[in-house]
Each structure stands twice: as C-alpha cells, then as structure tokens.
Length: 94
Image (cartoon, rainbow, N blue to C red):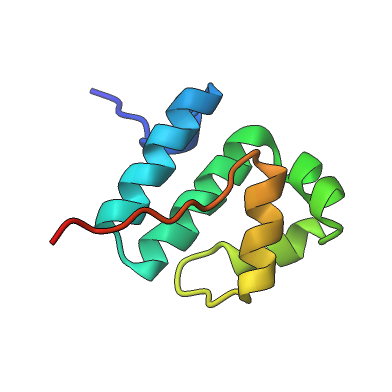
C-alpha cells in the first residue's frame, strides 16, 4: 500500500479555511506552531506571490517560516498582510 505525505497546505483552499486554521493554532499552539502555520498558509497561496507582496525573497521567506526559525515580528506582520490576515486581540475570559 502506498501512502502520501500529509500537507496541510493542500487543504487551505479558502479564506475561511485559512482563518479557521490560523485562529486554532493561535489559540492552542506554541510560537513555533504559529510560525509554521503561517508558513503553510503562505505555501498554499504561493511563496512567489507572498514574496512579491512582502518585498522579501522566496529563500528568506522559506527560512523565516521554517522549523526552529525565529523571524522578526515585522516579517510575520508582512506575511500576515500578504496572506490576507490580521491579528485581533480579544479579552481572555477569567
């Protein structure tokens, strides 16, 4: 039996799906998971397109959004804008 590697980017095919995925990771994940999730979304949209919109090179994007990376906050904000997202702050229930 042949199996294929699961790639979440294959399933991030709408703005609603992307938003739901990122919100879930933001609520439940670690910093590393959030960075990886943003990378998966960028991959699903197309790194070339994201590179053009952010002014960053594709290799820089892959490096910034890879496992173990610690990108600058400005980089994360550029990528979020390019993928059509934003950060909202909601109070945490006590």
